[in-house]
Image (cartoon, rainbow, N blue to C red; front, side, top):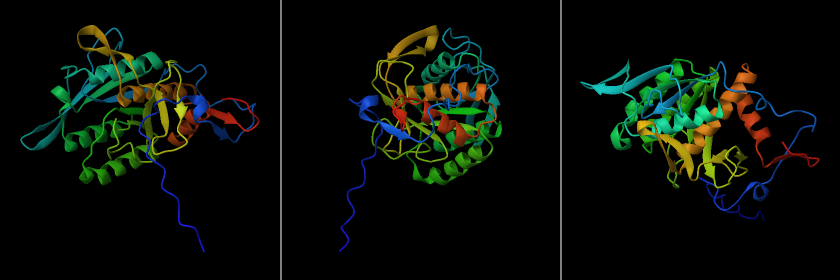
Length: 279
């Protein structure tokens, strides 16, 4: 008689109270093979887009912004246009500052899809992601998601389109155990947060759906008016990983999203080769 299957593993949105030694992962590979990318890369030559609430231009923690667009609905039509309006609520500026700190030489652009108080709609979000993907950015940071099932299939198609054209989408998991998209898709790199003190440490999650954990608790982030604040959330872990992707691609520009994800895996603090070495 076959035993009934055990309970499905719990979905993990964030790492709380555990560190690298609590989630060890054995990786195949010889110890003399270096981790792909992270050493030496600064983001130079890599185009990164923040799809969010906009980015405050010339913020001291963000630096130069290459391009900025705003997605809006006018007379029932979705319009994408260049803008100098900046950030509606601070969230996009915070994400951009983390990317700049992590990959200081990358080229940063913004697509604004959120309004004041983080307001937005699924169709505007879809249009913003579609615009970023079809501009063929190397890395797209999505520190947001939608819980509306009716947008899931179109988001999945866009995520696949990005994946096959070598655009890396880095997407934030919801901060609570709520189903949302597109972070749940395997074609994107999904991110939750850990509580480690090391601001440059990322972890691989051996119990997906969230694939990676990065600093996201009490993070110093850029804010409106050239200011900064301390804030927490998966939103701020995500741009750290997006910045790592930019660094990887700046040193190895021909890598596919699959290979970039593998580079993040091999360089995670809790991933160790079978003979006891550490990546």
